[in-house]
Image (tube, rainbow, N blue to C red; front, top):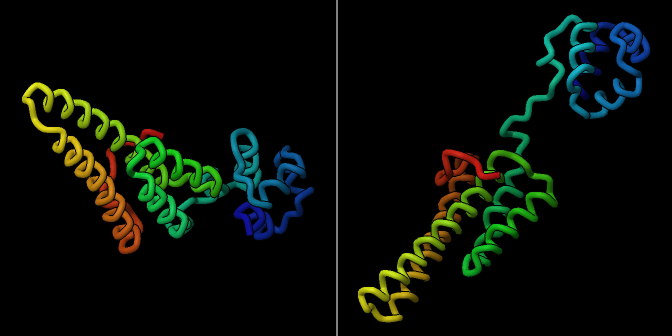
Length: 178
């Protein structure tokens, strides 16, 4: 049951009475009671009419509301495509949008993959230039690619374990790219 409906019923008001008292249409009240968060003018008018704080009408999205199964799937979706860095960003991003999982964990997972891909590209290109200037063998290029891929696999696996244990990420950025 929505917060608005609970508060309205506690105050023994019908939707029509709340409409008249607040100046918000019955249809808007019905939409809010069916799950849409009130915003802007409607939020202010309803809070004033019900003599409550605006925050009391807005549903709080807490960590328990996050679907951890999809968070883990989005995290693991980067694994099979670690060899092709754009795909290790696109697949989790597509899953995030398809499943509408726009929470802090999934955004951080995709941001981390974007950041890792950029860093891996820069490191690899620097290594290529350094390798040529020092005359190192081509075998070292393969070793560097493997190290970069394994670093991403470790990030994904460590975060998967932390999601299971503590419902958070162990390796994360201090900022979000998306």
